[in-house]
Image (cartoon, rainbow, N blue to C red; front, side, top):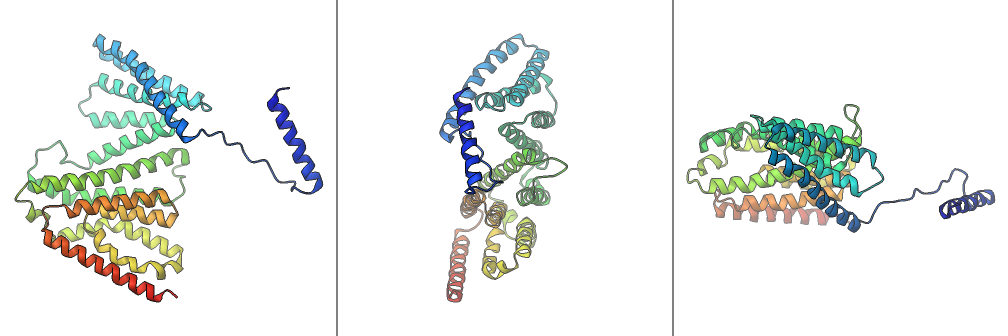
Length: 362
């Protein structure tokens, strides 16, 4: 009998003796053994796995491209995806091999896309990402595949991006007409996935957990990038002020961006009726959230993190809020005087709320 078997038998005798003496309840069980690797070892193994995968993929891709045969690219891509899928499904006890299979599967999808030479790259990317998501059971590959599908969906809902040569007037018209609806859909999906049980359409957490993480990082990244990129673009156009100046229509679209945040606040307060008396002064921050979509999204993530007890979301919401406010503050289409007065007024309001709440606290 091996040493491991002797240890197990010894533990069983100890547990049986404790139960007979009454020191341990009969329904008590041994805790499960945690075989998870330390995070430092996981990082090193992941880096080594991706380097090994790069060498393996290069050994396959280089001869395929030298042959200059699109059919060979497709065949090699299918073989890489099939091999990566088999490794991820058959080696669940290993950490190195599934990590190595992730870049192999991605390389296979790229090879297939290069071999097909489609007229519309986004449809091919979406279909290949969907196939990888369905075949793979690896969380990292599903996270990447979900992020790719979300990027394609966002691209389809952003018609002025790289497909049509619009002037500033047409760009801002599209921005006002479609962007608020797109922001509303993405933010509502973000709220739903992080506040509801991950059991939708008969699929469990293994499917939806990578999707909600991909949606969180993708949407915060896109909103931050847009805030910085659009400010840089419009600051170079002398006629942009009249299009970005606050108007009734501008305010209506900003309020539309706030709907997911207001819905999240309403649902949370309805579940916890005693919470409203303590958090209602935070309503003074809502006008700040209406300044830009990134601030509304950051406030939504921050509220979900606080309401659901997730420090991960709370930290991301704070970071996104700081990035969004800095992007708004350095927007050159708004006069510095107005932004300075707004900042002073915000500080005065927050100070007043703090004084009011401190007096009420016994």
